[in-house]
Amino acid sequence: MFRRLAAFAMAGIMAVSMTSCSLTYREMVEEERNVPVPPKLVFLGDSIAAGYGLEGYDKKDLYNCESYANILGGDYTELLAEECGHTMINDAVSGDTSQDLIDKINSGEIDADLADSDAVVVSIGGNDVLHIIFAAAETLGWDEEKGDFDFGRVDLKKALAALTSMSDDIDEALEGFTKNLVTITDEISKRTDGEIYVQTLYNPVEYFEDWKMLVEYADGKIDDFNKIVKDGAEAGGVHHYTVIDVGNQFEGRNSQLTNMSDYDIHPNADGHKVIAETVDKELRKGSYSYTVMVEGDEHLTDTAKYLIAGGAAAAVLLIVGGIVLIVKRKKS
Image (cartoon, rainbow, N blue to C red; front, top):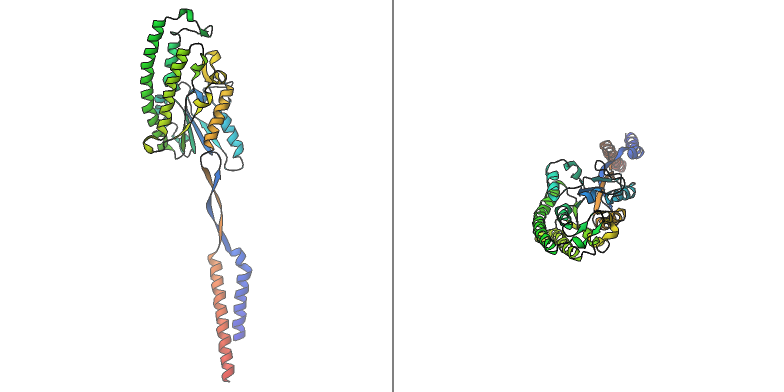
């Protein structure tokens, strides 16, 4: 009897030892991995972000010119190729004002683009104020055909009146921009958990160095614009967005970094490279990650557990049987 019990127990133990490797499994679990740049990046705004004025620019397809959005999209795609991959979406529209952007966001047409985005970069507001300055430029003596100021036809009284009128119009535009910027960032934050970035504005009027009164006036108003952007970032002690100070990078270099020699306020190819470097520097300060499914810890299957339990029981029976046998022999 004991020999049979022993044989059964040994067979159970051997069965467990021989099959235990195939009777295990690993659950798939999520693992978070950090990356240096945002896996999904969305650009919103106006012609600056759209790449207007660059070779290859097409308002119906923004992905064929060397805009700063496309520069970063290409760099990040290469950088994350062996990680999670990269998605860059450019929803900027040339000519859009801050109100136009609000309307676009509220329309719902870019909700899917914003969803799951890791970062949203916004360039907006230039069309709110710059067109007012340039509308007054002709009154102040600008000759578009010659590409310079004709001081001989400047009427000082009209020039001062134009500046006064322009000042009122710009102040009104800045007041509207202040409210709109709050709405823009609030509406974006409702649609994404990603970080929001807002660019400051450069002063293309700096190009008109011979007309100092206009340059200095524009400097002051664009400084006011940029102060609105910077103050809004941490308004009320709450972080709303991160500022990308493009204006600071263009200061003193607007003639070299824009197309103003052609009476075009937009950044040229070199300007877009500078903006790309500036945006990239800020984006890399953020924290980004993605998740992958990986094998977790090894576990026994239910079958393996039953076999182990059976083997353990057989071993116990074997020990008990041996003890009983020994006791019987001693009594006899």
